[in-house]
Image 1 (cartoon, helix red, strand yellow):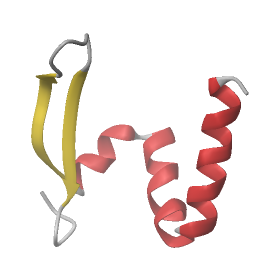
Image 2: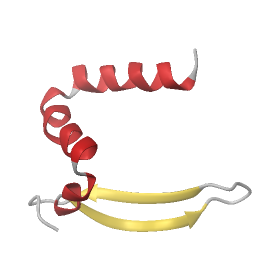
Image 3: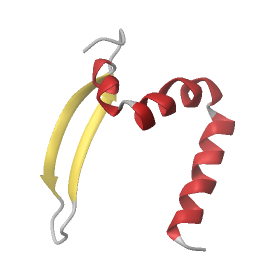
Length: 67
């Protein structure tokens, strides 16, 4: 299975398991990704993972929906 198919399958599982969150956040992410900033708090960005070329970006959903 290629990574594109895996991504679609994972998205379907998320939509089934968390329908309310999926219906609320996915349209924002696809149409206006900057609108999610009102709901997310940044923990850290561009943190290098040892022995890789990976950069981690960590966020959490703001308690009251406002950053």
